Image (cartoon, rainbow, N blue to C red; front, top):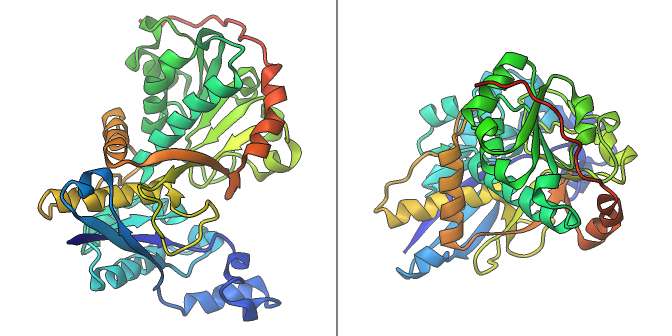
Length: 380
């Protein structure tokens, strides 16, 4: 007996199409995008049976499919939301016709309009953006990399900065990471809301120093930066960062400018965790991470399929809309652990971060000094 999930993917740029459609090479990008408008969603990959730690106990497994939505990132940003939503729902109906019981929205498909709410309301099956596990794995990556690369500093000597700290994801990151750092810098638009967040997550009573600022230039003080804004364009620039800084970019579209990759080789940017799927099964599509590895958002969709099967067909939507709670993130992180999904590596600007990249960054991290304590205005 098995349960089936669907995960929706799309090309980030027209060049991503050339491996499967080499005859498109040489055509103008605008012409290629015009051709994509006439193409309907199709299944582009199938996952073989996946047995998680929990489904093995009942001799069951899950399988799935990847449905390609023929829209580039540029098209998704520029086309009317209603048109993009129709394409997404078409893809979900393709998946449902082939037995899918839950669907995940990949990359920018998770960012359209109200971030999955309208899609879920009109979908024949429950939907998730996968962002809860993405954030859980990003927090795990922040902890692991901080301990590995700043081992010459105690945790109380390290500074964390959160860009977009007043959003629900930002608040959850602060809440879950405040005990791992000696200082937290909240980078916000509204200074008063920033202090409200500091009070709400208990920074003043946690023994952790903090400051609330409105300009990214303060990121130069941080050892680890987590960026989680809902901005339409990049907000973290090369001039905002110091050598030896780890940046975890959870936002989609990404918060970190591509200039950082080009101009800051001494800064380590991580866009999310690479997750090892239990048993390293064939996922039927190459994501550049090696056999049996997937994005965290994909893993969340697989977990929901497994949980629905184990709960007698009670399939649930999970992460939809702009906000998520600390409890949601912790719950999905716990489910990932129980099913045997593990953080296996990191990715940056759509590429795997290999050991050589980590080793090249290590000397710059080793030169970082303890934070300089800043004074914060009491909020209690």
